[in-house]
Image (spheres, helix red, strand yellow):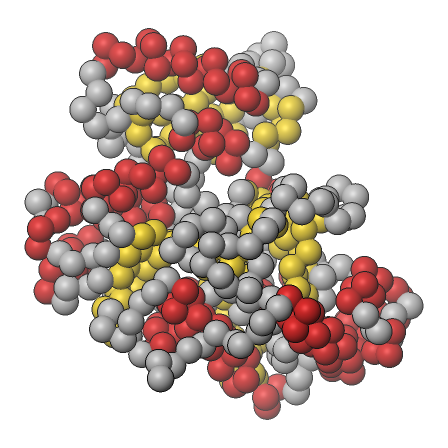
Length: 429
């Protein structure tokens, strides 16, 4: 019998039972193990015995990135130090690094549910997985590798960047799967094309982590490389790292491992639950995490729950791709805009590439101006620029209700990155 990392749940009710037991355990464990959590829970008037049903989750206080930063270097630690076998840290894009501790069981749990991602992507032990993400204190490289070994496929720990080496590995090792950011995926696709290597490699799938990728970008990568599938893998250091879910081969949303954490989608302003299918902030509560349990942790990531059953038949619920972060929001002429909305508009327009930049400036008269720089698609004549500018400006106006100046630039002229591409440049005071 083939090994599976999937549990044998037959219904959501069985998952809810696991969630309730896990929630009771987490609250008790955090209360007894962490003075910070004990104080929070006491102030909210909820003790370890206060959890009788999943509805009681709503009584629990929120945890935020600030809690992690204030508790630096070992925030919210709920086990004695001798049980800690590893630490990881976030890249610290907003302030002080968030450092998370792990027990041996945390590491094993993470490897197990991450291995599910490879199973969900229909990998086999014959696959060769080129891991082109950051190693070191980040959760990325070691997470992808640990799970790959647990799953039983061949791991090729390439790390990020170094295009010469990446191309050589793809040719020499005949890697079938590549794990990287979407920006790195585009960089690789263009490079493989430029070097005429497409017929010499055996790449069938890419797994993208750590940044949202537009449909246009994915379409471009798929065309350049002739891939069968591209998958999205969410992940953040606070919640173990990457591997907390994956979209299946039907690509109708990310199946998330609801037996390891509870996901709430809340209105970032009111912190009330939003109806299924509506966008809100992802708030997570872990169910068996020992070193640093999370209780209603506000991730700042925006997504929505995908209603209904997936054609793949998996019992696991789905959330949409990450649509942006609540703290990525741009306020432009009193309109709240997420970069993902502009992404969405551009993805629907023929004749342009997938790369773009949003530049915000303030004129001496105090008025704000937005310029959207977009690449012309490969092979498109510059004589079409004026029509493209008009079309893009009209769509942004129609869908987002703001006016933008549009600049069309040559294909390949905007910077590529092996990490996350910077899209928004806010030059206002």
